[in-house]
Length: 91
Image (cartoon, rainbow, N blue to C red; front, side, top):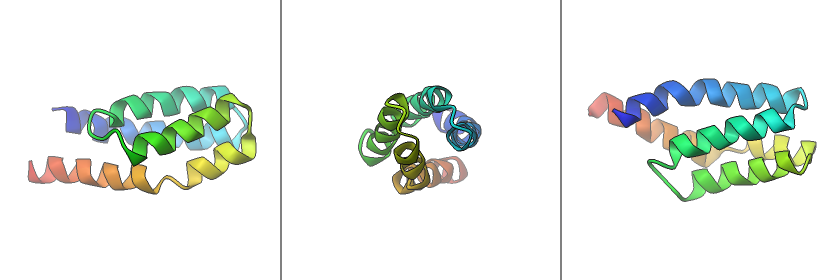
């Protein structure tokens, strides 16, 4: 089931993004964020995807502070992940 895959794949990708941004590996952060965006866009194409794209754009532009700020303010991404987890629980 796609929701199970998303719930399994998303947390490690988020951890990779956090580490990569913190350590200044912005190209790696952008790649992981792109993978996460692909995973989540199966379920939602609005705010979560837009949040991730803004972080990807900042990382690709080597804007460390902006990428970090965007990564830390991922409310829509976390909300969507909670909804996907609920699909697995209630599913």
